[in-house]
Length: 257
Image 1 (cartoon, rainbow, N blue to C red):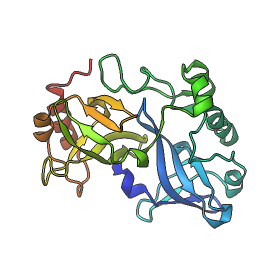
Image 2: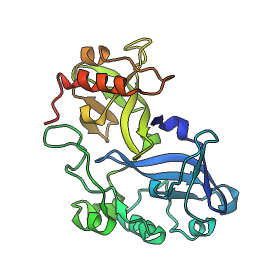
Image 3: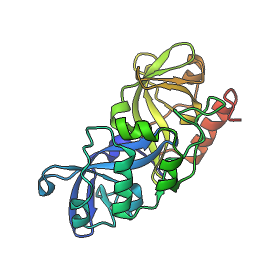
Image 4: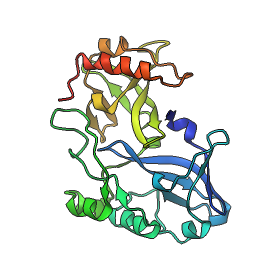
């Protein structure tokens, strides 16, 4: 099922022996659009320290009670590497996390660097062992100095300007993530005064360019094409039929080859 990131903020995370804290953010890989970590504020039991938890640790989520149970103990979390989530996270720190928790695969490989494929479209990748991902990465040196350049905060990207090929269409309001694989499927666009009364969603596959320096996302479509896309109703769950219609609509003028 597709769930909005905003609705998942504030979920309680529970260890096998007690509550850990509240989810305050999600970090994703900008090459795969896969959630790599849930950021959890631990509260008083761990001096309000923030910790990074991989979706690999999640058990069956309790959606009704807004709880993320994990297969970890509070002691494991207390003894985890202390990472300042307000600073860029380095590859070495990620390796320490994966070693501490015995997480095996890392969503860090990529068919493209910096966010775009050879066709100008977003491309998915497969998980690889953490050591292999770090060894093969061209960004390893920079990641050790300045933090992993592909690790992005979902919260920080909300508000980014969304541009069509010929004009601005709105701002990033939210994300829709698939709870079966934790891949971000769509960005929810607040069209504001551009398309009054209409919501639209944009797949990473339809993005032409992301300028992280200027906080701008460019969609490989015109304003009119986005405006005429199937309307998104935030009050309803996405149906298979709606997604098929949306994919078919954009497939008329956006090539994935």
